[in-house]
Amino acid sequence: ETGVTQTPRHLVMGMTNKKSLKCEQHLGHNAMYWYKQSAKKPLELMFVYNFKEQTENNSVPSRFSPECPNSSHLFLHLHTLQPEDSALYLCASSQERTSSHEQYFGPGTRLTVT
Amino acid sequence: GQSLEQPSEVTAVEGAIVQINCTYQTSGFYGLSWYQQHDGGAPTFLSYNALDGLEETGRFSSFLSRSDSYGYLLLQELQMKDSASYFCAVRDQTGANNLFFGTGTRLTVIP
Image 1 (cartoon, rainbow over the protein chains, first blue to last red):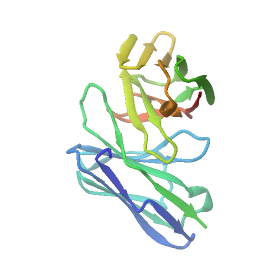
Image 2 (tube, rainbow over the protein chains, first blue to last red; image 1 turned 90 degrees about the vertical axis):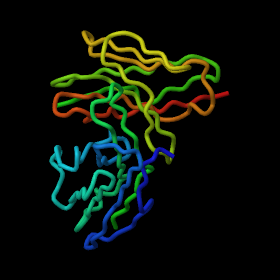
Image 3 (spheres, chains in turn brown, blue; image 1 turned 30 degrees about the vertical axis):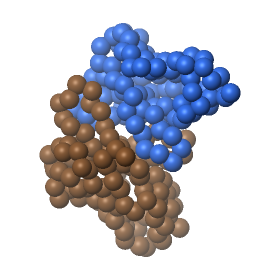
Image 4 (cartoon, each protein chain N blue to C red; image 1 turned 90 degrees about the horizontal axis):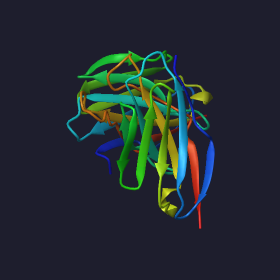
């Protein structure tokens, strides 16, 4: 248990569906992240929020839409996804300006797009 | 852009020592981190090096040479539970804690 929870753990959706992934951190951190993990590929940083403000968007398609209503919660809204979007989506949090720059990851949501 | 290279797979015997290498090419560099991920689990932080040299934490040590753009993770007294994927990750100039990960090294520990 890392202090970062994600729901749902598994999600199957059609290409025309709309769904949302939720992440919550109980660590008092001020930065949160979304990563995509596909087989045989490195973790890809998608979005970064520092102090609730989006500071990074690594050329992610607009069918992925993040939302950070407060420093403890992060959402990833999904719509009209493609089969190649099937992957493990990981949320992480960290505290800015620490010496180790450690990120704490949630267990991930395994997404399958059919 | 960023590029990190690690071996894709390593196999070692229980009780032995194994070294996992990581070479990187980045536009900026603030430090090198290592994460462990068991099958079906979340990545967990192992170590961070910002300066050249060796950092030791129990059975695990991490080394960095900034001049060579190279680092490694050293695992000693291997245990079966160390079978997992190990990722190196670089902090670059674009953000304070933004990490860019390698493709990971799958370590299998055999009896």
